Image 1 (cartoon, rainbow, N blue to C red):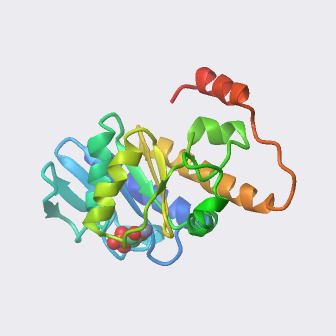
Image 2: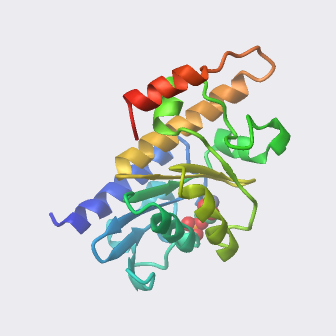
Length: 214
Ligand SMILES: O=C(CO)COP(=O)(O)O
Ligand SMILES: [Zn+2]
């Protein structure tokens, strides 16, 4: 099987897995992979649980739609993230419930201005790191694609205000592991509301960062 054919299969398999876990309600979310000639992206208005490898959208290196169904309305946002993260090869965006809940909180309820979520577990530090909030713009707005650049260049994971997470990774499986960890941490954080919580210390965060560099 060619590399492109494998990427097509991998996108559809990931979509099915995320859907089975209830992480992409309705037709929300999108997935992309960088390929030699450009990108493969999920088509707009598609259910991630029911993707067809042959219908995935293909974009050339200039971002022109050259094959398959019309691409996600967030194609420009994905391309902005690839642009500022040249080592990454895959992106996953979801409307997973707990992460979206965090994205709707008043910013005064966020952990701090650098990260909406606190470092409560080693795996959050390892797979996500910090999770900055990107200001709100409507889905598909070129202004959102522009705004995300500043945040994504230093962070593999960002949270779109009142919308949801966007995570980049060196591979589809890396991006998927990060976004699942992000969703789980958002859930834990909400479960812990009102309870006195111990976050990891700066030393403990550094220890993880050094032992498991991203
Ligand atoms: O999550 C989405 C928009 O932010 C889904 O849009 P698309 O169906 O165009 O991919
Ligand atoms: Zn979205």
